[in-house]
Amino acid sequence: MTATKAQISSVSQLTTAEATLFYSKTVERYASFFDRPEQRLRFLNNTLAHQLACKEKLDHALESHSLIKRLGLYERLKNAGFYDRLLDLWLHRHICRELQDLLPSASKERRHLLQRSKATFATQLLFRCYEMRRLLYGAAVAACVVALLGCGYTAVWSARRVNTYLASRRQTERRLANPAGNRNNAAVAAESGVKHMPDYRPEKVWLVEQQGNYERYSNGARILTDYETGNHTRGYVVLPRNQGMLVKTGSGEQSIRRHPVGIVYHTSESDMLPFTPDNNASIEVHTRGLLEYVRKNKSYNYVIDRFGQVYRIVRDADAAHHAGNSVWSDAEGVYVGLNESFLGVCFETNSESDSLDEQLTEAQLVAGRLLTQVLRSRHNISDAGCVTHGLVSVNPSNMLICYHHDWARNFPFEAFGLSDKYKVAPASVSEFGFTYDEEIMEKLGGDVWPGVKVAEEEFHSRAEKLNVTPEEMRRRMRERYREEMNLTLRLRTTHPAEAETSRQTDDSPPAPASRPNARQT
Image (cartoon, helix red, strand yellow):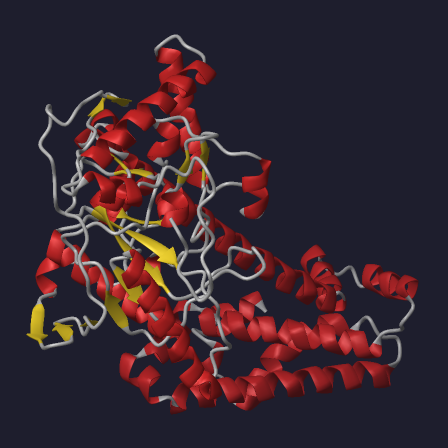
């Protein structure tokens, strides 16, 4: 076969008769495997017939394909020897298939015939591979699957490493640009923003129309003023931070502020009827009872009913009696007694069977987000100042957090365009040392929200720096809290009798509200 190939440039130049003679010289060497002449003849005829048919198909495919002709690939394949090598592989494939079909099935007899014919090692290896072709096919498929899985795992692993590196780099840059000692963790949490929600910008919201009983804003919010009333003017001071420790101050050392700096979200805990079409009239009757009660007691600045209608109760410039004993902080400082410094927004809803899983209607979600935008725009309220009642409420009589539980978990911050305040270390714990007990953890589903654990570490670190025990530090800060709460009460621009009436110390349980009434705070 080698000598014959040297005399021609390519097998493609041979006629059918010449190709038959050309391939027969190779096939005849394997025909000696057979003792019987009829088997030898059948092997020769079958192998050559299959090989010539493959040659004709290959020639037809190469000659009829227009792209191959246009690029001149046919001649290049012949000149480079690929054409001859491909046909040679097909020839040996046909030889192996015919040997498989015609040789005896016993393995010993096969080996004896191969040895007797003095076949080359390559021929014997090719024949063995053909015999185990199904096993080899399976191994090849398995190898491909393993390779694909390996590539997928490598891609996922690489993506995670890249994300981890980028996140670490962003955190490092943020720490270098804004040292942690000069900033409040609530402000840091707010920087992360909220995914999948439009950016908040104050200039996007403005008053469009004001009529006798409603206001309409550019973001679609509509505020009803039928139940609007007044109360005492706000008055509070901001407690500054000094490297993580509160600086004791008094009303004479700092200017008294009058504008709201945040929003506290509440639930009414009033009687709820099934929210179905046949209860429309009854639901509205319950809502009117709630609104009358809130106006009489000046409980909240805003109420959002189950149909998504927003009612202003106590005017923004005046304080409502909604937060009682409470603590929160932002980048500017710490606030005690949030009635004076924060707006109270109440949703007409309640928790069922002490599950703390308050439910909002779709209309309330939309209205709550729009009202949040209006209030943030009007008063330049930061994201860090938007929080829930359960996260700010405290009880100074036993130094426990979460005295009121509304929205102590599961508040939809992201739906309101706000960052998650459950991850923020509350100042009630980190600055004043308020703590929690088993009863609170049980009501919260077995554990407190993540920010509390961070705040505990900060409080213990402060105590360690001052070389006092956490218990002694907590006792001191309890007295400090009482002083600041009393200062907040004295700053109200109202007569003493009203100040005493609206004082909420939470030292004793609040008077129970008769349903359908708002929660007393």
